[in-house]
Structure formats: structure tokens, C-alpha cells
Length: 537
Ligand SMILES: Cc1cc2nc3c(=O)[nH]c(=O)nc-3n(C[C@H](O)[C@H](O)[C@H](O)COP(=O)(O)OP(=O)(O)OC[C@H]3O[C@@H](n4cnc5c(N)ncnc54)[C@H](O)[C@@H]3O)c2cc1C
Image (cartoon, rainbow, N blue to C red):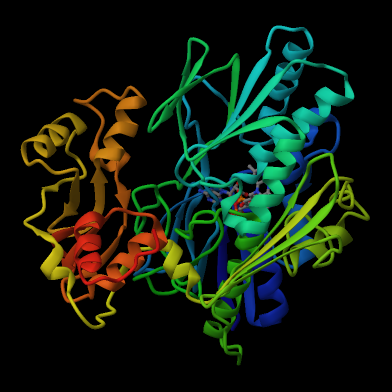
């Protein structure tokens, strides 16, 4: 009998997985798609909509499902009873043999006072902003990337397209800026991507403010953390992504579901996850489809298909909509070295904005009878590609326990013992007081004695700059969850390289999962420097 596969979601990852699974397992699986709304939205071109350069496409999910050979049920996943193999949904219990959770992430406003751009729903608000600029009511606009889980490409596109729009309409004297916590623009895409984007921003007279967190926009001023402010009339910000709460599944504090390299939800049998809902830190359509393909292979194998699933090897590709010279970029990150290229030739084909091995051609074909999926790359588009080597997911997705031991001094010799330990429910005011009393600028966050996060004075600064109420704001909202941690036996050299690689100044030290110390960069560096080893700074 066919295995019953339920796929919760009606977006990019869900459709890619359904198509991949149908191709791999054919009639060995009966696939049911479950989604709370009847449409599939193809959102990437929503940034072009306010400028009349593209439009968001909408497809009937029931029609897509029928064409893909799967059934579609209107309903929302609310939880999972893994023992009974039942999905708890808004339309009752749905039994499954294998379940894939692909419910996406929820965009939440991240910069108080700013216009949050979430996609199609906010097109009209951007159009209004353009009208206000044309009318002379708005003369200074900042585009802002908040900290946390975001997909930052759209804000660069919005800034560049706004600049191109102003030029085309001969509107002069408008000051545009782009504020981002990244050290370089579009840092994720590597040096070549960053350089190309920096050039583009420069060519469009957009001032780049890198290494700054936009905190709040009020009274004509965008406050920045760790310091500074920009006087502007309007701020457009990206939302911060969060996952919805699902009973019975492990989730991070932000609601993301941890998965292994085959898309299997950690600790829950027969449940898989793909797309923005997973704790993989890059929230992008192409990455969503790749993990969906991996999970589909693992599900097919579990359904009895004779295959060996390939572990997840994410490749980041992007197509940046601009309005100037076209350029194609590629960045490889392979654990050994880096290779960057910038070339005038396309590096992959077809040039769909969301790549999906099955989804892109499926939508293109479906487009013959419905609306076309998208135009070919418009003039001035910049293509970007980044390969993330195997194991990169683990590295990026922390938690990670660095077990390398190596020679020489150990972390145990350089760490401070008995670190200040707080609970995720503690309020920031009390924690700040305890940190001052203990003369420390960091604290570990533990639940039931196990390390779950770290909070530093920098986090407190960020929180207070965002004008949080010290007696209400909780540690869980401001800490870094699932931090990288090391064992006391780890060599200090390894710990120092880790801190440099991840640009962090504190490393919690654990015994099992129990926090036993804190290693500070300056202490570790002093020890290493004392031995005469160059740190490269
Ligand atoms: C403005 C904008 C531009 C973007 N540009 C690009 C780009 O150029 N390239 C790129 O690769 N990516 C881009 N992205 C990101 C990309 O859209 C997402 O990474 C991708 O859609 C994630 O796929 P997903 O399937 O995880 O989630 P989604 O595509 O968001 O789909 C989630 C699905 O789950 C459904 N759902 C929600 N709750 C439930 C529930 N409880 N039960 C069942 N179903 C549920 C939703 O209705 C939806 O159908 C952009 C995003 C935005 C907002």
C-alpha cells in the first residue's frame, strides 16, 4: 500500500518537495498538501511592483496540486502527535506515515516606526512613499536591514530601484541611505557580491551605513546600535522572521525547527521539515527548494524507494534587480579556500528568481495556461551564487560543540569559572544589575541546567537603545540562542580561531550541556599572544 505523506504548507518548499517526491516515489506515495490559504504566491518580484517593473504572481493551489498529482486540503497545521502519527490541524486530525513541515516563517515588524516591507501586501505603501517623494514631502529615506533572521536582498533591490525611479522621473536632491548590521553589503554573497553591490550603491548615490543595527525610527531620527543616528523623513525596513508555534515539535526560541542534513526533524521520527521554518539561518527560496529536494529523497527512501539520499549541500544563488549594468557573480565557500568571480556571462540557467529543480520548470510550463511565472532577467539584474560546502549548515545553524582539542593551553586555563547564569524568563533590568554587580559583560542563559543562550552587554545596549521596558523585556527576546560552545579541554588556539571566524568575543564553556565557564576573547588572545603567536590583527 502507498505510504501516506502529508506536506504542511503551500509555498515554495512544499511544492518543490511534492514534485520531487512524486518523481522519485511515483505511486508508492499518496501525497496530501495542507495549506491555510488557497493560493501559492510567487513573491520575489513584489519588490518590482511599486515601480511597475514586475508583478507578484498568484496561482490556485488546487490547480497546481492537481497538475502535480497530489491532493490539496485547505487547513492549517497546529501540532503533531508523533506517537500516533497524526497531524493536528484546524480541520481535525490527519493521519500520516511521513510528514513534511514546510509552513514558512512569519514576518514581524522589527524596527518600530518604520514602514515594514513584507512583500505584495506592502506594495501600495511603497507606491505612497514614492508619491510623497514626488510631492516633495519626503526628502531623506533610509532602507534598513534589522538583526535576526531576515532575507536581506529585497531591501537592496528596493533602495536601488527607488534610486533608478527617481532618476527616471528627474526627481533630484533626495538623500537615500542603506543601514545594515552586515559588515559589508550583502555579506552572505562573499567579497565579489559585496563589492559589486557596494559599487552599485555608490553609482546610485545611496549612502551605506554598515555594521549598524537600526533600532527605532521616531521624530525624524533613526537610532542606531551600537551608536549614532540618522536624520531621515522615512524608513523602510525588512521584517524579522519567526516560526509559528507547533505543538509536539522541537523549536528554537524564534520558533524555527532544527533539522539534520537530510531534513529530518531532530528527535521526532518520521517528521521532516524544509524551507524558512527550519533553523537553517539563510531564509531564501532557492535554499528552501534544495532542502525540500533533500527531504523528498529521505522521505522516498523511508517510503521504500531504493535510493541513497544526498545530504543537504546548500548553494546560494541570487538575482538582484537594479537598473544599471548587468553583472553575474559567483562566490564559493568550500571550507578550504574561497574563489570569487565576477563575469559578464550567466553562470546558471534558467534565470528564474527562485531556483527549484522541479518547481522552476513546473511553473514555467504551468505558466502557459495561467500567468507567466516571470520575465527573463531584466536589464541591470545582478546574478549572485554562493556554494555552501557540506557541513556548512551545521556551522551556520549552531548549536555547535567544538570538540577539537589540539596542542598547548586549554580553554579551561583561560576561562572565567562560575559564569553568571540567568534564566530566559529573567528581565533585562535585573540581569543588567547582576552583570554590574558581578563586574562581567556577559552571562550564560540556561534552562534546566542546560546552556540555551548567551547575553552580552552589547545585547543589553541593543535592547535599551530600542527603548525596551527593563522590568518587562525578557532575556529570551534579546539573547543569542544556541550559541557556539566549547569544552574546557579545547585548545585556546582553536577557540581563538573560532571567535575570530564568527566575530564573537565570548565563548561559553560546557561540560555536556552544563555551562561551566566563559572564555573571553581578550583573555584567550593574551594567552596566545604571550606565546608569541600572531593573531593577524
Ligand atoms: C519580498 C520578498 C522577496 C524575496 N525574494 C527572494 C528571491 O529573490 N529569491 C529567493 O530565493 N527568495 C526570495 N525570498 C524568500 C522566499 O520567498 C522564501 O525564502 C521562500 O518563500 C520560503 O519558502 P517556504 O516554502 O519555506 O515558505 P513560503 O513560501 O512562505 O510558504 C509557506 C507556506 O506555508 C503555508 N502555511 C503557513 N502556515 C501554515 C500552517 N500552519 N499549516 C500549513 N501551511 C501553512 C503558507 O500559506 C504558505 O503556503 C523573498 C521573500 C520576500 C518576502
